[in-house]
Image 1 (cartoon, rainbow, N blue to C red):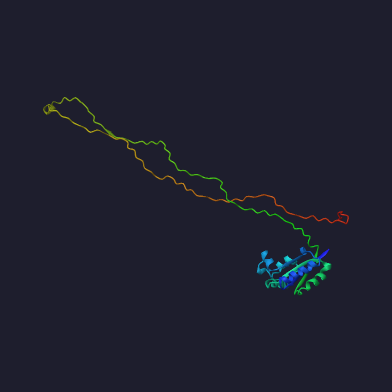
Image 2 (tube, helix red, strand yellow):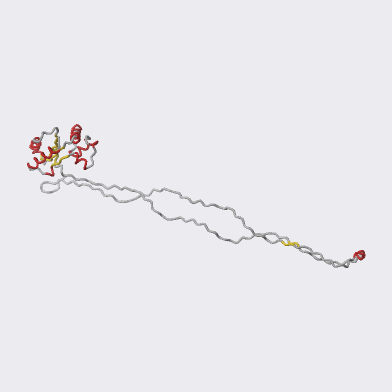
Length: 242
């Protein structure tokens, strides 16, 4: 069965609501009727700048909405009016338009033909989105401490000691020089001892800093995608030959 969507413009929301009541009284279902007003558009986040754009009204009423019709719809909403749409069988379109015209005939009306347009299958597809997060992978600890190691060095030490030498002499000339008084001679002796002192010098420095590197890693996963399989059947439910 073919259907049509009839779109009518009203100067005020109450007029559109009266038209809705007339359609319901004539037996048309509430699910097939909708009223668009400034409040309903605001509730779904539509902005004023979008009201006169054809894209908004084509999403609501069908792709056959013309640019000048979109302008009429936008001005109607901004001025406080309302837009009524109703989905009816194609054979009842004329009757429905007569019912709508009883409430202040609308300034604009469009009809969109739909062949069982309510049966829609939407296909979804997952996408793989890869982000990054920083995690701690470990620590590097640098500790300074003191060790001791044995060392040695060679040094030449000098010593001075008194030597006492005795030698026999027989020279008669020294007899006249004989001194019979007591006499003491002292000789200072010396010896060098090693003296240890320490000095400090800088032999090395250790610089601690972070070095960054980048690498590319391939992430593998699975994403889902919906598809459709179309089968053409005859009246007995058997698959038709291609």
